Amino acid sequence: MMSSLTDRILETAFEAFLTRNSELCDQVIAEDEEIDTLEKQVDENGVSLLIRFHPVASDLRQVVSAMKVSTNLERIADQSVNPVSSGCLRSKTSRICDEGQHKPGAYR
Image (cartoon, rainbow, N blue to C red; front, side):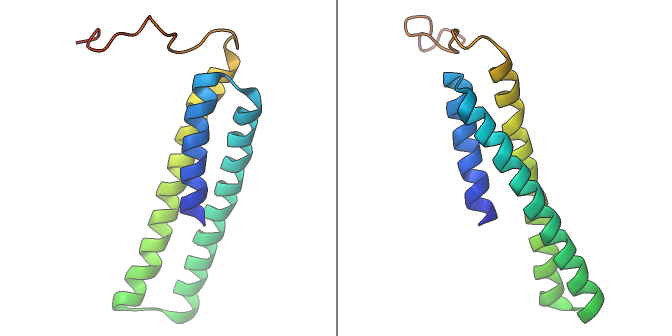
């Protein structure tokens, strides 16, 4: 669930940044807060499992891996918010790449 939500945030962030759609910007920011909550829940559950059951070997690796993956997914979601927040602050009339301005190989 958390990975698909992060993937959706990343895709929505690109679209919001390129189109300057303020509704999409708000959606990305709201979903990022949901991911933050999920990451905290995974960490709390992982610590709880470690304390109560003292897992060893593969069980321990699975718990720690789940905690690390959730941290990385949360970081991806946070990084998706950065361009959206800066893009929504700029003028909605300007586009990132107007047709005719960008030519392949122009920046080589």
